[in-house]
Image (cartoon, rainbow, N blue to C red; front, side, top):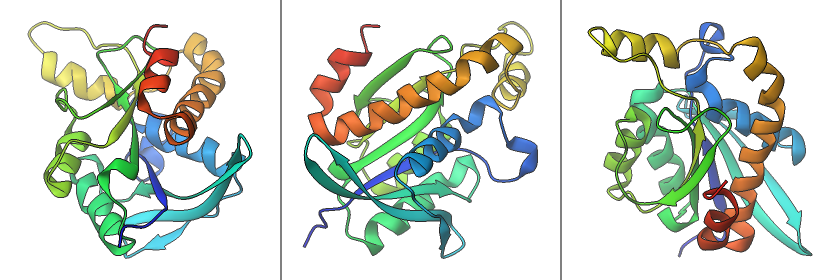
Length: 199
């Protein structure tokens, strides 16, 4: 019996040294949702920080879990698969929020299925769930310099912090990401794509 809960997962890396880095956009957006809906995190099998809440929008209540995997990005799937199996949440009720280098900072795109776009967290979730057919909120962080050291540049970029300009815009951007996750749940993917993808 499938659960009527939704699962929202914000991707990131645990630990102080990764706080406020581009790769932790998912964690930061999850924190906005936690604050918005009074979700308290507790440990789930050492794999994730997990909290439970109820969203009340448009006169409807929706129960949801909010997760921040503690497995490091490349093994995010272990945490997502464990939670979804334990609480019987189907992929069509899962929303994953993550950083995306193919989008400029401040842009959000929403999709379900399709390629992982080189994102190791998404690759891991695709593998663990056995399907890419869950919703994704892609939070743009811009791209690293290409060239001879492209790989190192990319690693340093996603694990780097934000400049002063971006830091000023960050709170609004994170709230938009939180809105996108809520909108998927309440209005469906197509409507959310219309709202965000063209911006």
